[in-house]
Image (tube, rainbow, N blue to C red):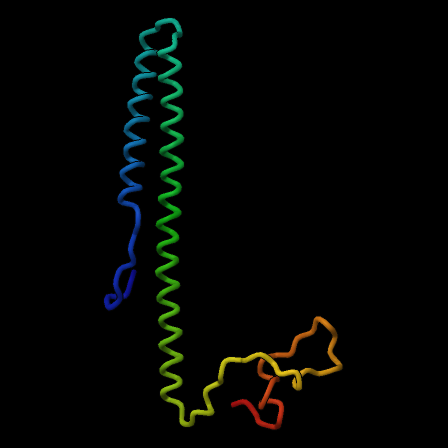
Length: 143
């Protein structure tokens, strides 16, 4: 359950639910029509074919739309959780930067390496870790 101080995420699906229900009503109508035609025992005609194809088609459309609606709802929940996580991360980073004793204790984002930082004893595909670049490898220790 969501925290009471956080807004409830948007759940899409009102329009999708309408179309799923509409496809379900049409499918039910076609299946009832096909059942009535089968119970009457008339010889097979084009009407039977129309009722059968309508029943199958509207049932499949209802299933596909229902699956799409479920995927949209699941994606909306994941998106809301990701947004919450990003807000928490940014808030924690902001709070950590504001609570730091010195401005140097906050680790900066790594930047592109200068040509002088490149070691000649590395292979063509090997990379240098971000914290081994720049000032870090000149005797300064990470806290």
